[in-house]
Image (cartoon, rainbow, N blue to C red; front, side, top):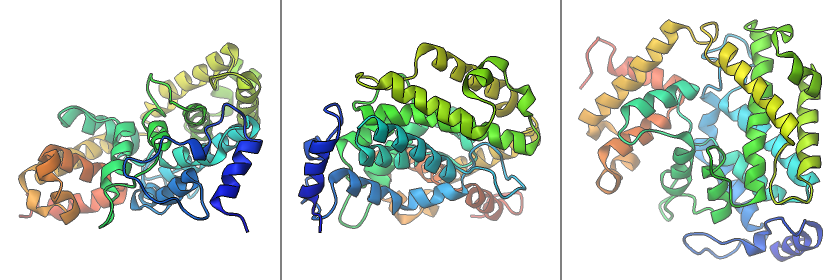
Length: 337
């Protein structure tokens, strides 16, 4: 039988000196007695996986709005693919796989319904704007609470990795840096896969230079990207691709923005207009009908303000719940009071 102390000793013996060891975590905001069997980062991962916010990712858009096929990615499958890529990199660099997995599993908990389109709409109407990484942090620090605990009370390292998985600031740990680059590797490749499946693009449409460098197939591209991150980052104090591979990865990213993410074949004007109407209408409705908010959200109004709480509620909705709630409230063309 292995106890937590045994796992911590194994980390000290096996992991790189640059790895973040669970026994040396900066800890939690509120002290908790350590688990008998799990390290601190394993405990964080489990809390994230068992959260309501994690389960809701299954019904949140990745790129394609209400796709007709069964095989398109959702925000949940994106999260799992990020975790798989990140864990492979962490394992081969001798870094902490448990910490990496915890950050990966939690990085998108704050995403809105309807993907980045929902995020842009909330950003335009909410005072102070909206950024999904900050909302993910708010989910784990405030919104996913129990009667005895505010938020999940995760370790500093996991919270930092979640916040800094996107944006200009580097994560405080190499494990957090792994998730940041793995997020980009995962979404570019699986979004190419979905876009080809849907007929929005063909493999022949992809830019020539990155395909010659990384490979034509889904598996080839991911393998080439992961191998480059591992070989270039080994022994370094930063996790990254070499400049040539990084440049070509971003050529692919630019192509996807121009030909998929902003394409009317993926997001028709009428669909985008409907999403805009749904989110704006729900936001305004709950600002003027705060008593209709769920009790756990309503209780936060005095502390955080009504606008923040309404933003929290809408950001946490799944696509289908937002649509059904909108239909229920506005079924006669005017709000149901």
